[in-house]
Image 1 (tube, rainbow, N blue to C red):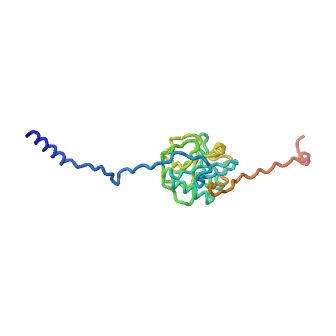
Image 2: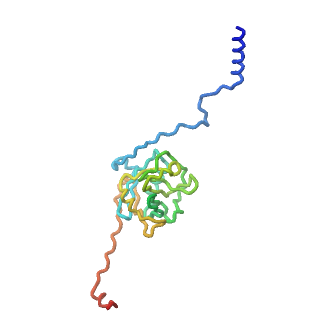
Image 3: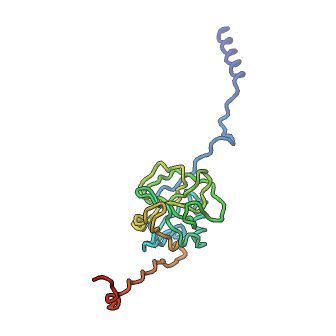
Length: 225
């Protein structure tokens, strides 16, 4: 009996010396991660307010599904600039074969952007697969502004380092046809960017002027013998 009392005494002493651990979540504890809608809807007739249309100078219309639950602030920025006509006439200034095509800089140098403030990063777990549309940035994580790029082939090394905000759902052949170069010698342009729900007609490239017909006068004035 005495031994049991001694054991109980020592246990009580130890418990009194050790602070109780609280299982309640503190304010500094990591918050629950948001749930991302992984599936991308490729139906261009649905949720047209979140479809970006790019009419390219190569004659293609590219449809991009914007994903506000992945990156709400970046999607809102893209929609705002598109509706302002910011992207109209802008070239794809950096296009690397097998990697990506980058645009969104009105100066065409890769150094420009809009007058709106830079965005805070919204990195997410969505993978950079073929057709991914992601925000370009400088070395700082919170430096994205207006430039974005479209991925030709999967580049998972970009995951959680660049803000993935959408996916090409139609017209990927037009993306594949974008002229390569940094910058390209004859760059592909965005003739017009619009939001599908605004029902803006596709803008097509101007037809090329026909070659001048060879006339008899031209032949008679030729110096060839």
